[in-house]
Length: 240
Image (cartoon, rainbow, N blue to C red; front, side, top):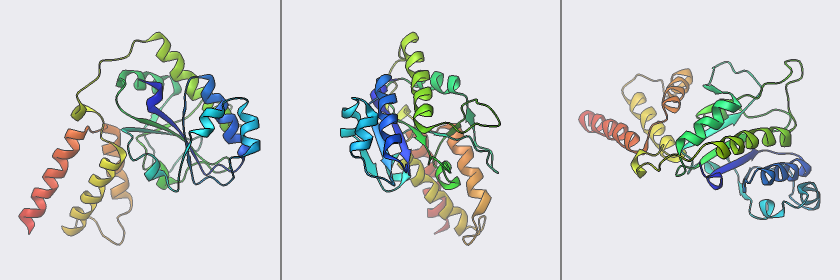
């Protein structure tokens, strides 16, 4: 896995010092793609002071208003969370996460998503992700400082990358489908399921959430998403 293909995505960060400290943690481990989603503070003097020289990471940052746009080109999206959810999401340990990314090879883009300091990610944001990553910690005090969490995750990947040769580059159609491609499939799937009465358009509810979990867990490739969308299009033509 090429480290330049991995984005560190910070959602709704409220303090500029946390953005700067996260940039420093990234630069320590040779990461340079910082993405901010709906930041609640300006990236100014405080952020650069806390970055302690990792200015290039802050200078080259990208900013988006929503998570879906920020991860649209990513084939694998991993959310970090210390909070248990009512609908369990596929989980990875830091070690399993780093192994998985190295095994993926170097061509697919990856997003590692970190939520708000006080409330983390919403359930809707989590549903855009393939996996949830939890960092083992004191069960009575498990909430890590944002920059500390970034440092641990980046270190695990950097360490694994250093001891494992990169995998062969797969064919483009065998790469994981991007988030945008997968979201396009989900939109078409929901439309078809609603039109045939399987899903209530007023309350798609847990059905679509569970289908999301199923497909995201399987990490469909671009070719597989194209096949699935072709099947749905054939169903729609038959119905028409």
